[in-house]
Image 1 (cartoon, rainbow, N blue to C red):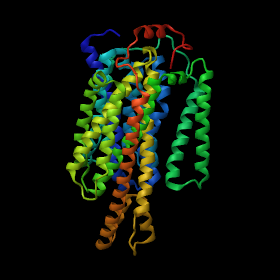
Image 2: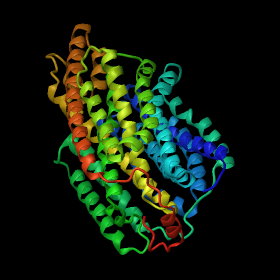
Image 3: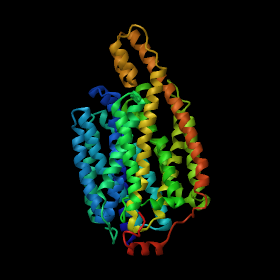
Image 4: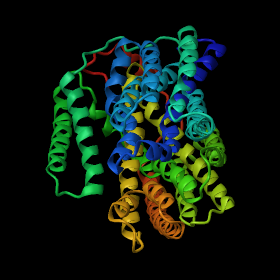
Length: 518
């Protein structure tokens, strides 16, 4: 797409703004969770759903929204999604109960699902070759910055206002984005669009929700519940039916043939595993800094900024890494740095030493940005522009699904480790003991209501159990990333440094929907 350099820069700014909005809204809730626990008193399962509803609604609909964007226009879908995001933010801010908050967060996830594939597919159509790698590196680094700005923004607002204010702050950003987007963004879409297969949409959404529900509930309650078995069977059945249906369709929602390209399938798989291990860090450390270290939300948010600086550095260095080392080595290097960061995190204790955390988060941030920037550019570079929305959706689905599963699984594992390590002192009332064993947040609340001496014992025991579980979780994540580094060296070996094929773009744009990849 031939547009001027000024408009290209404006397009990148609008797309980055949309991605920042989504990233901030995802992580700002992590900082709010302790406050929500105190004010709403949700159960552990409700807390997990509050944290995950946004991400799973987003992941469940990304494929559908990416296909819709290819058909109706990526700019149009982005502007509609941004407006819906603003409305959903207001509803979330004033949700009076945990159940309504979960529903509102899911609505936000639906709105976000219209934004993410649109931004990447617009970048894919506006930038090419080395320009695209640089644009994705910049947008990736700044998007990770959003994960750090979320706690900071939340900390400032929570120090002065009620928890709902962290969502109302989205509204002016949305207004600015809609106005700028309407004026600057170029429109693009598939010139030969096909139909959306509604059964495929339903199968993918129901299947994902069923699997997610199973993961959450099994980790907390075990298999001895009928609803868990039903959810597992329904989820697996729907996902299997979805995969079997796609090859039979002339216009599949997800063209499985694309996964026969090693560069595409290996990169998507790497993204899922990497995000599985890494996004949980934001949730776990928000709790560690506030509930174990006793820091305020604002101080906790400020503490994470150096890591986001590392992420920006990693995003900027990603194109250089591709040029010098190639894609396989650059992603492996990112995985290795992430593994190092996790290993350093595992050394934390009940008494916080911030200088130790500082080095760990910078190394971790650089590694994460390298992985995501190179992976995103690789996925977008091997597909034609006409189907960039669908490919972007697959890339973002991998990111969101991996991250959400990480929060659910690693969060549940940490909860199980916490309960296994916890020692409740004698004399604590049974109902209070149950709350203490439920979550660290519950233990903090109960300790404040007990006699000072007994409360201090409860708090010390709960903090020690939480930190022990966190250390083991970080060590497991470090091992996972080390294995992923080795895997990337083999699965991405031979992938070209520059992925650019204008002739294929032209041919595929003119092709029928039945012959076009994803």
